[in-house]
Length: 207
Image 1 (cartoon, rainbow, N blue to C red):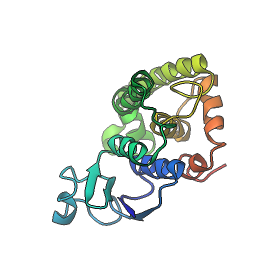
Image 2: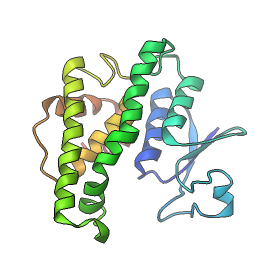
Image 3: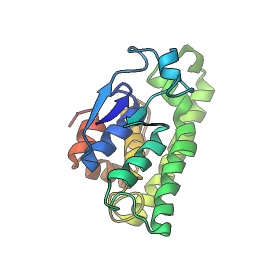
């Protein structure tokens, strides 16, 4: 059985849990990371030298990096629906997965650390305002894309790209900042919430 190492509250672990639910892959999960088993031990570092969750073990195969993990799971256990083999369709999905991991992730960093984690090192008002503005700018990019597709981030159908993007949208709405009106993002949030797996792993089990 697939083994997942990482605390369920981690946004990156939740990507893997959501993907497993969509793909109907059974797994066993162990709590590692902040507040649980330490990731800087020799035991864990042998699995991931970055000391970060998630890590999976599928038989004798070990893999880290959440987006690499969900791609692997879709390739190994999927039927091509979430992650099609057509090069152009797959490239469109990868484009949005990579955008979430780089541009979108960077844009929310300061605001999230300030407003959610309450980090003392992230309380400078001008930096916070700039961080919120940058996050909003990236969310407008997403809103424009969703308005074009009218459904999901890579097109008319739910794909692997919607897992990292959908979790990012949850983080956006759950962070206490002024949210500009983004109707396509709001509709997308509600559309995703019709999926049982997103309700469990993407909206923190909340209505």
